[in-house]
Length: 445
Image (cartoon, rainbow, N blue to C red):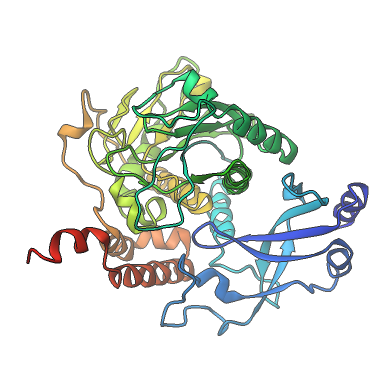
């Protein structure tokens, strides 16, 4: 922690935000004066209740206590590699992502960041280094304080909203140049390694690509990026949303995950020097094909998530694989040996990045461990094949409950806590009477 204290002094930091990603990827934690933060590092003075990891997106808790120590204290251990400035504050403020431990020094098994670390250790035991590159989509929408009122595209610099779809439109992106200039500036100040920006198919829908790298670092970057974009948008009087399906009749927002595997020398284990697919590559895809449906709750964690997974909106409905095919769940882009990878297209933008990466790598790991044949890649549209993914949250809950190999890899304690949170969110959703029901049933049935 010595270097951390030096950095805080050098940057004249006044406050520190200690962040902990919860099950939904929401930033929990504490804010404290920098002097207080530096003074408590040696005596583990920064604590939170373990229940932050079973808090639902609505702020409630499951009826059954699924914490391991009756909601006792857990201790925050800041990860110095995540220390960043918070660029949108006037007063010098730092943010740091913290790992969580019990009093005896053991890690909190239900922490999403620990779940990803748990999966990465399996790869490390073989001397393998997984590499990922997320592609994250989101919508810019007009500010809307009425949850019953449908979202609308925002006005750009022209003073007008988008009427039609502007896929890859340069001028459509330029409508929001001031906003994206802030995004790039803020990301640079935080060391968030984003690459290209493009306009996606939906009205006001954008996509940011991240440069490839180590999974935990990329999950941290996606976590910080979401927070950054929302803050920048608010300063520009619009909302940025990572909902999987924020507007009807518009495409949903995904978080596609490109993944491959390197050895200790940095050689891609998914292709031979002459460009042929390796057995590891095929087995990895075999694991994705077999286990992704059971892991769907990690990629589609909310009731809204399943509205995205419909045909003809650039979203998958199954786990077929194909080469340079955007209609299937698993796409293999055209590449040379060094760039051989598979793109998992299942995850929504609303997914917790730690859990989505952990789930995708866990399924690939199981495929390599079990030497699963993926079958032949399909030709043509994947939408002509059966819809084999869960169609709603209870379906995904049931599939995860019966997938013992996946539960073993991700951890039973985590699975118990995660499913309890999602069951509580489903129960909360079931209590809501929607505007559609009032519109069509009130006077007609």
